[in-house]
Length: 332
Image 1 (cartoon, rainbow, N blue to C red):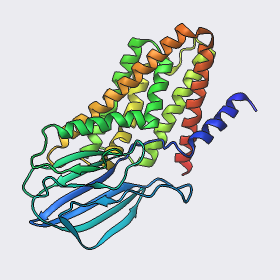
Image 2: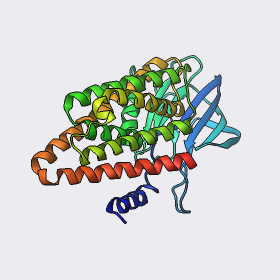
Image 3: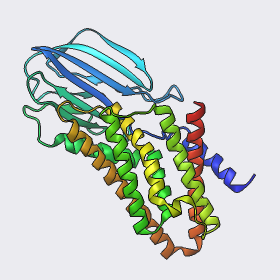
Image 4: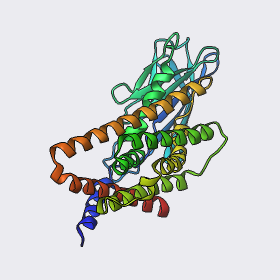
């Protein structure tokens, strides 16, 4: 067995269980006032396939102290999520009280929305360190911008398929100015499909989109491998980096839109949240590009003799992961 096949087997064994390709899909909990004293709590919890009986339980919603549940909460299964709803009777305005989720693990986060009948909506980002939100008497200006910016950045930094695509693009193009042009084309393209899909002007089913995203990773990994073997080879991406980045950026934009649809957008603040999310994605992408370029420069200066071997190892690892996701998403 050739060494790269062995590498693929090792990489797939390592990533098959713990590494979820994409997407950062936060949980959502929303507390909505229907009429004075009557509230509805709705929640959506992403469901990760459990590999063993000791897997951590799903988080559970937490209600404000002055609220009581009326009747039995209703829960139902949806694709990759558990949906729930409970009717509440609450006293007062709920200012100063808390609601949220019982626990969030690792890098997971959630969006909490407080929707009173005649006051501004409040949006909060919940984390493992702070899984509940404090309801404010008056919402903080710009909180939606901050929360959705952070979620957008995290979607690149922890959404592994988008992350690997950006890394592979940098490994292939290498030169700073062509990388910047390609990254700009990728940003413009995914912004187009993200906005168009979120506002209802376009859309594609998630399954083929996710398969095409995996294919984009494999495509770039193959091109990097070819260039490492023949440094003078003019592949498609080396000749037209911004064109390739733009085309695949359109596809990745549908993936971003799918994640944002799962999170939801606050009523009355859709434009602000969408802008902040997209800016967060761009900030995360620029951070990844700068980090990879810096590491490549450091590797070239400090360990020039192992540069090619290190790049070949990274390229085959990326290609193996992309191939695994592609097969998984095509055959289910």
